[in-house]
Length: 262
Image (cartoon, rainbow, N blue to C red; front, side, top):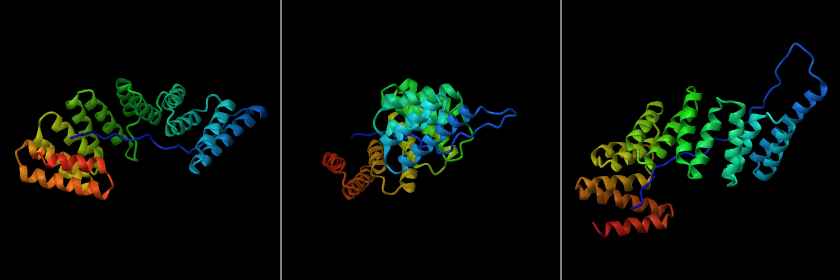
């Protein structure tokens, strides 16, 4: 059966505008006008993005950058939109520009890690997630836990199951209700051949998300490894039921084929 770990997509647009820094001397009028114009273009871009006009948003963020080439927030938000449009290379370039302007831009490191993974640069993704963790230990919206989860997912893909488990465990210390991290740690334990250790994590994932067919499927595989045929069949049947309800025909058929061989 096809099993997989889960990572999290890019962080969303940042809507806070860069404010003018008060100074004790008069700002030349042409500089003040240019800064205001950049903010206006940026604000328009955010509004267009919210309305679903992504190409228009990219154009406005580009205008903001043209007026103010040091507008890190505009680079970041243009990267978010470019990633949504499938332009991963362009997104990575924008996040890099934002990072060049602010070496502690945690969200930019995080998002560049996401697109680097999508581009097949696993080592670069791990480096970016590590930088995001170092840059900001104070995230209060769950992003730090997501960063550990994502780094663990890449480590698992690269064969470092122990490092992945350490990351998933840290994610769960930060967020004890993080279903994906339980799922991923259970998956990593199974990859190591620890079927018994995987079951409590997968059970927690199911408790937190009872409609997760993948978690039932994975726990069924773990139970098969422990020779618990009855429990395995129950889990796989539940996975098939959920897949059918959710219209996932391919996954449903895969489970039915698997059940016929037990």
